[in-house]
Image 1 (cartoon, rainbow, N blue to C red):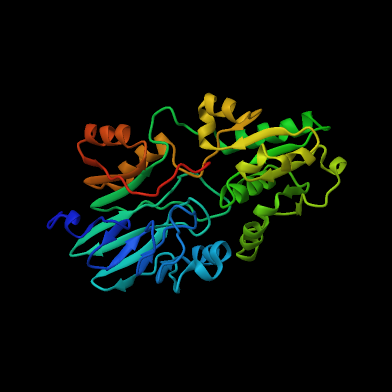
Image 2 (tube, rainbow, N blue to C red; image 1 turned 180 degrees about the vertical axis):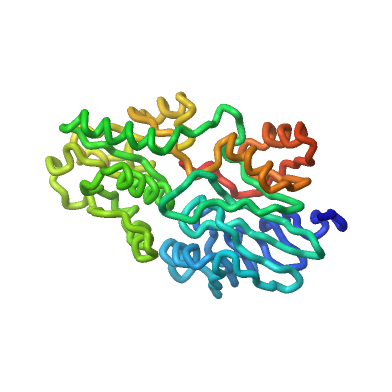
Length: 338
């Protein structure tokens, strides 16, 4: 496809986020706007208070659980793969593989195709649809782990280490720090696939989204609230909590917990030491370096914009393969505990 006129003339960052002018909508705006297309339910992409929201049905439900009446004025669910005309552009959503309901935004205008990835990963995830590369003229990618040092360990290796540590420490509980949307449910599902069929105990902040996943057809097995459990009952068990609760007074109720953290950042030993993590699991819901590079090859875009993360190394790589790379700084993107 020929880039004429250049997509930069009709899709660009403004004061609210990435704006598609002919469609008259923002993608993952960082403040309330008239119309938002939301890639997934994490708080740095799905903000409350937009007048109109377009997203997958799962993301709409996640926003309702997280924000209640503030989720948005008009919430429109668009199934994956179904095209929709929005003013002067065609929009469809393609799976991003990041968390349940996550999607890439595929925009067609004047014979050009732009794909905005949102956050994504390439590995199989039992809790959500896998990433599907879409060939395009312009690809807008994340780069959370956009350095060659970031290579995530196989999921099976991480789960084997966790299950093995539980078996080796029957008097201690394992307190696993996980992000509440996506990482929590993925780790539970991977544990089930690894044959771990015992109860998994949850901090109260994780319960609502786990219940939503199950209502949306993602089985998670026997889950129980930590609140009300006897301390002795938790010996030899797996307990999951948000990262902020792992070193909080809340954790004092647990029997000599082994501190576990599941995140791509655990590749950096200093981060693990700073958090006091005894068992780091290099498990992320973002693409690692190899997956970012593979995706750029797969989509065959002549130009790639890098929205957030470690932009410089990826932009340099893009130049070395003969394509145009550009760092596109957007306000409000955060390094999640992923």
